[in-house]
Structures are given as C-alpha cells and as structure tokens.
Image 1: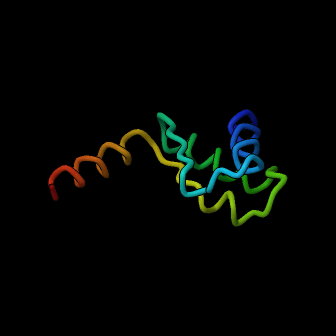
Image 2: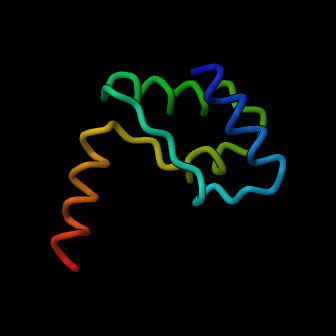
Image 3: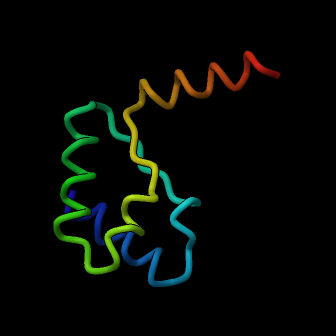
Length: 71
C-alpha cells in the first residue's frame, strides 16, 4: 500500500488527472487497505486520492463485462 501511494502521488505531482489513474488489487481486503492507506498517508489533498479508482479484479471484470454487453 505504501508503494502504491508513493507511485500515485508521483503521478499526481506530475499532472496526471486522478480520473486517469486506476489501481487493481486481487482481493477486496487489499483494495480497502490501499484506499485507507492513501487517505491516511497521502501527502496531497485527500480529495485527489478519493477520485482514484481502486477496485478488485472481480469488480473490474464485472464492469468490463457489463460494458461489452451494452455494445
């Protein structure tokens, strides 16, 4: 989680929009931990970290399947 926060903070400091950043974790527990760690330890405005999509593999797969079904 600390490494993820540092990388994301670097992206944000270099002008990457939070909406362009996504983090995929294998498990829901890891997802929750990454989110809480970023909000707790992140050096920038907390809203920037809240705007980043962090999800488990399963939720990305479900979202992608739904998008394909709509096409």
